[in-house]
Image 1 (cartoon, rainbow, N blue to C red):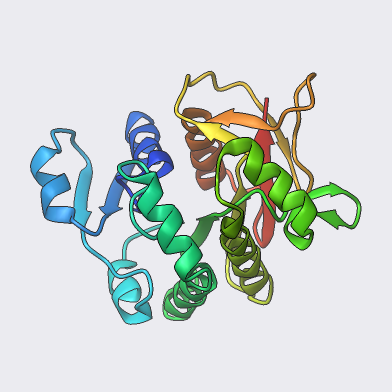
Image 2 (tube, helix red, strand yellow):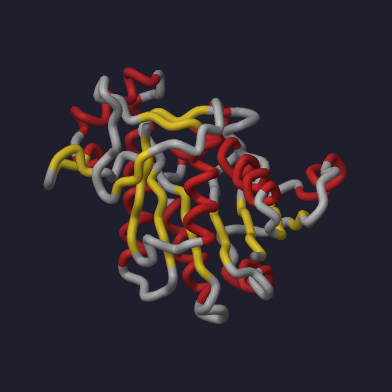
Length: 235
C-alpha cells in the first residue's frame, strides 16, 4: 500500500511511519520541515514532503497515488516541545476542525483515498450520554491529573468539534481516539478495540503506548473496519 502520514515527525506519526515501513508499505511522510527530516532519513520506501494541513489544494496535490492518508496533525510538534503545542492549541482550538474541513475538501477530488484522523480521547463516552468534553468538572479533573492547564479544555473540545465535522461527511473517513493515557513505550501488538467508549484495564485506566497506537492505525489502514466511524484502543 501507499500510505501518507501528516505529522510524520510527531510522537504518534513517527511511529506510524515506522510501523508502515516495517510491514512493507510505501510511505509519503509530511512534515513542516520536510527537508530536515529527509536529510536524516536512511530507510527505504519513504519520501518526505511539506504540506499545509489547512490548505485543501496543497493536500489534494499530495494525494495522487495514496491509498490512505493518516493525519496526526498537531499545532507545533509535541514530540519536541509539548509546552509549545499546548500553548498553540489553547490559543486556537478551532484549528482541529479547520484541518478536518481542509482534509475533507481535498478528498472531494480524490474520493477513493481513505482518511484516518488521529484525534483526542475527550469526546469518548464515559457512560451512555456522558462525554468528558461536555463537562468542565470532568475535564478539569482529568487535566489536573495529567498536569495540563485547565485552559487546555478548549483544545479537548476542539478535537471533539473536528470529529463532528467528519461525521457530517460521506467521505471514507475514520477517526481514532487514543486511550486517555498515551505515551512512548513498548510495541506489544496486544490491545483491545472499542468504539465510542474508552477501553480500560483492570485498574480502570485507559492507557496505550504510542507504538501500539501505530499498530492499530496500520491495522485499520490495511483492513478497514471503522469507515465513517470512530474507534479507540486500550490495554
